[in-house]
Length: 446
Ligand SMILES: [Zn+2]
Image (cartoon, rainbow, N blue to C red):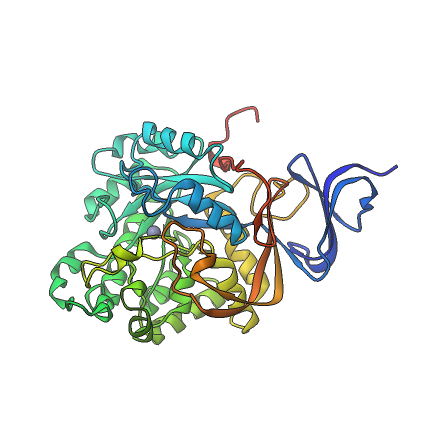
């Protein structure tokens, strides 16, 4: 009599720290119980994964789900439904909601809203302000918090700490790695006149590469001065890739599928203000450099920066049009298409979406397809050709910049802590997402 399991994923090509191979994965009590050739006779359910690839659960460490306050754009239920339909098992959500997530009460409120409504696992960033610097050391260690987020350049919402003194005070106050929107606010203000009414192609002229580089240089200098580590979100410039390569001891970096896939000026001609986001999509020289940074390992994580706005909000004439686009549901298919095209390996994709977040954010029991870890699994068909459509998008925003784009590679199943949440495009388990745990904030005795 062999062991009993809740699930056995049978016959899939498993990709984990041991490399690639046809192996079974057994799940019991929400965790991975065995990997290898497994007798599935005593499994509660056998999932036939022949022809499919089983990956460690994809973690999207950068989403905006807009709840509370902006729920006409998105909420925690719809955003997380989009996530699991797209093969994402956990999300880290940003603090620029209304009210902002800048107090313990606001974090508690989000965690309360998430339970029973979110389909994937979750953690929330706490936003830094001038007013809450004294509380950050406590806030960043609260359960369900993935760390502090700082907007050094203004984007959607009111959160902004643009000056060196403010950022220095934040870095001195905290212990964990903080995440930064890095665009130099002073330069953005100086260059407002570069925006051309009605022309979103002027967006990267206004928010130019120099604004991003200057801010990242200031940030890294402050990290070095204070002895802290920083995570630079959505890197968009060749200049920053080169700079960050020299500072990997203090700085990790994120790239987004949007900046790896879209390119100026084509995207602005094709998509108009739908291509508008912060920091902006730039020209081919920058896109190629982000790919080089990704290939060379300068980039540590992929985040979708899922930042939904309604089509009506996107349709205001530039620059009144809102910055941001959906992305949590398309992260996996868009990046698998890049894998199929040979732009990155599937191993690198896994590194960026599971091992990378685990390393950068200090995850407990996630980010690795190994015995004892949470059974978070993303099952994909690397050969499936399918067309992304806005009709498929579960976000309340209900649109994607990839509408009509055929990709090779598609998410087939999403398992969250052993629960089969999505299979072949259908939600098959009620929402039971839970807070992600972090090594640095685990309570004693667990
Ligand atoms: Zn963002």
